[in-house]
Length: 337
Image (cartoon, rainbow, N blue to C red; front, side, top):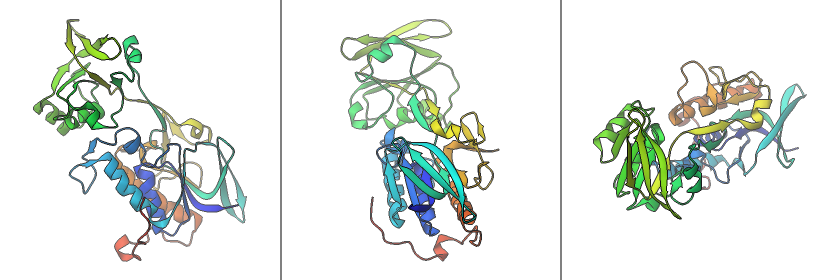
């Protein structure tokens, strides 16, 4: 049995920083992720979207942030297992220590002394628009993610939504798309105040209290009809592409059956990122506690807390806080991702 000190489930920003910090603490580490590449939502959903709220970067493409995090994470050569879904967890006591067994969908087992859950919102799927035309034109002008900004160059674009993704894409695609219209069904946005201000100061047309009524075209989107949901007044205009940013439907999957204390779709943790099951910790968007903010920056801090707590759990003689990295041995000049 190949026994690890720590298995990190989730290869997004929080999991990647946790892998680095685990190596810094001299722990034998494994990362497991259901996606075919590391980076989580940064690479899977919006690789070419700018991120503005990560310390040290005025702005950075999601894919570039992911690349830096991956390079940092692999310095201590963690084992990386991609396209694996963990379906079950159990544990036993061995020599007075707890040993966990994680099993994937084809029966492969992973054995570890500690588990860190960094799965973000879990398995995610875009929230679909309940409009028949939206499904008919999926892949032919209707989409939910932007993988390549250049695919929208010179296009007439309609963005539907009022959250961070909708507002951020309206800003990110300014100067790329020929024409941008953003409609939102109310006048309150779920985006950062500064982003909303930049949206109204920018070149995109913003139409509040508007919803999508119909999509027109033959084999590809050619135009839309929208309506004002207070007056029911309709308006039609040509568009080439429609970006639907309506949020995600999240599912923790098998994790929900582990006996963890879950509130809504979040795992409850202590200030040391401990779950109610000794040896299982969680960090990032999956967790909840009083004052929790679901930010990448927050996840980095939680990852460091969790790894130090896990180190103390598996080795009670180890210090919880080992000192600053600048006071420790320099990291290896390991391989690049």
